[in-house]
Length: 200
Image (spheres, helix red, strand yellow):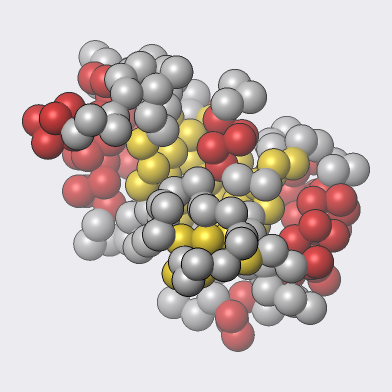
């Protein structure tokens, strides 16, 4: 915490730095979940937006230590990540099956934690096939969606920097834009989680 406050790039408060967990690794599996919960509890004191992304199931009892914290002011948003529903076994082996993963929306709602469908990465020719299923999730749970572009190591190209690191660049492709257009029929759709949070 001291290291974060000492970093000149960190701006405290709701209008300050978005604290993002799970961008580069899974933060909610059995090994990392207790550490992630403790980290979120510590970060609550800053009152910054905190977002975490996962391909695991979030259970209501796991959220209790967060919402029972004296610093809890509804500043956490959970992003349930998925690249495909119908071809999950082929492309997302080792993650929680989508039908269990998406139960997390109910657990978050019951806990007063906002959640969002996070469609990332968009796999060309694959993710778009499930647009209707993702749309049904949005409609049934009353949630927004983020359809994210793929981030690649920067190599001096003209592509914009990613919102999570200046070392990564956005790699856009047509399927991501098609997914955003398809899901816009079901609710609000954003290109990245930071844009989503800034709408709150």
